[in-house]
Image (tube, rainbow, N blue to C red; front, side, top):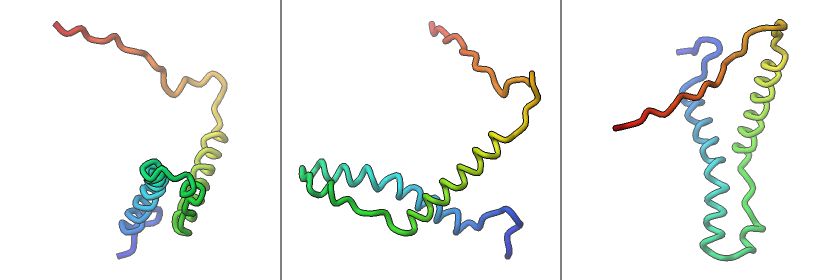
Length: 95
């Protein structure tokens, strides 16, 4: 069944999540392995990311750049209200 325009297939979504998770986990795991082995030579020979991970990083960087460009070019009239106001709440005292 074809997806409506603008929607992503579930398989593609799961692949993207897995690849982004792999990119986040790969560096800390390699540092942990280096710390355990105590060898500084292995740190110098860090594995290069796979082509799929490089493509996904490039895709995410491009997407982020497009989102930031859209946000930055959005016209706001002078004197428009702020998007949000941070108002800290007082902590409740427990008895």
